[in-house]
Structures are given as structure tokens and as C-alpha cells.
Image (cartoon, rainbow, N blue to C red; front, top):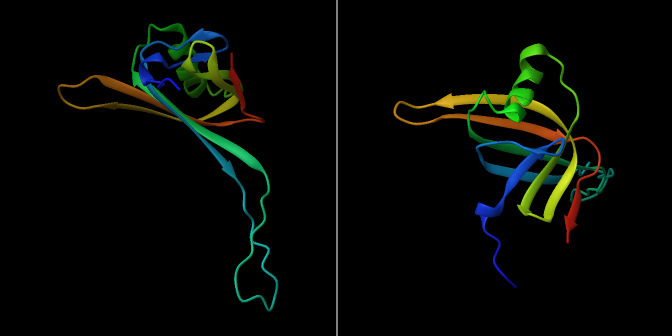
Length: 130
């Protein structure tokens, strides 16, 4: 099996690539409510609803149409679902509808200005590999 390297990755929103992103992460989760009954000597858990959170970030570029659209959601308060794809290769990616939760702009003296978004996948996360 060939190695997959991060240089091939990118993120799209509504079909357009978000410029200057250099990191993304998706974290699938499963709720595990406790179902321990009285008298049990050890805790018991059940598997419940699946979910997924994500982060993506890179160099801030307010002139990039896709970055500007994501920032506008926070600036004008119109948070809405966005169609995202997290690519590892041109035809291999995870996709779903996402809801942004936070935006962080960060800078250090002598370094680039960075931006990071976090959010949740609203519904199922699908994997595609051609």
C-alpha cells in the first residue's frame, strides 16, 4: 500500500477549495451513556449516537472568497450548514454538512497570521475513495 502524505490534502466548502489551509482534523465520536443498574459492581455503558467534530486552519487571507465566506458567518451572525470535504487525495475524502462553532485568529511576532475554524458535522460523515 502506498503512503498517503499530507501535501495532497485540502478542504472544500460548497465545492470550492479554501485557500492557504495547511491543517485539518476530523474526530468521529460515539456517545456512550452510562446504563449501570443498582447492584452492579462495575459500570456499564451503551453505544448511542454517532457524531463528528472537525478543525481546519492555515494562513489568514481575507481576499480568498471561501475564507471570507466562512468569516462572514461569524461577523454577520448567519451561521448555516456548509457542505465540506476533507481530502487526502484528489478522489479520496470525507464529506458532510457542517456547522461552524468557533473561529480563532492568531498571530505571533515575526510569524504569519493564522486562522482556525472548529465545528460539527451535522448528520452523517461519508467516506469516498475512487
